[in-house]
Length: 213
Image (cartoon, rainbow, N blue to C red):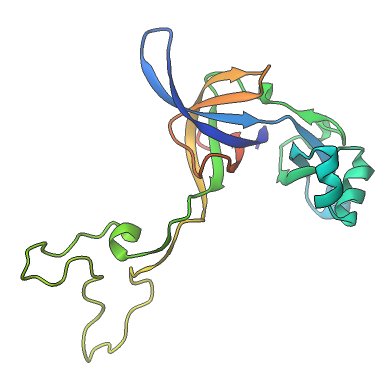
């Protein structure tokens, strides 16, 4: 990874390009992210930087941050943050503890991969969870939204693993690949990305340069 940043999904809107096209975009509040810790090959076995996001207000930090985490942030001389994430960059030597990663590391036209936690849908049936087809919706059918056939009778006399069935749907780690950056607002720490990104409004996102670019 050449560059990355942590952000929060604000919501979706639309913008016009210079040639008059209308693009759907997701607005992301990206950074600023202070560097809280540096991981090194000598000490940790790999190179990475640990960055924080969404700084606590001072009175909230007193109530919500425990002593070990207060010490961790105090060692870096950084205000306590709600989120901590590691970024494995190609060149971590360019950053020192206390530096800030800002949204201007990206520019319009860049390709990015965005990782977040998908929306939770609770316990759902196979039709919503796996996009299966319904049964006949006529009155005599009596089988409208069932899971369908589960297995053969005497052979194999069991349900195969990975059979699509009802269950918990959502709250998964999801990465959307190769999205394009439409606009960067460095003054307000906003990143406008074309298309949709995982998760609800307010969800935490990790933005990295695309592996496909």
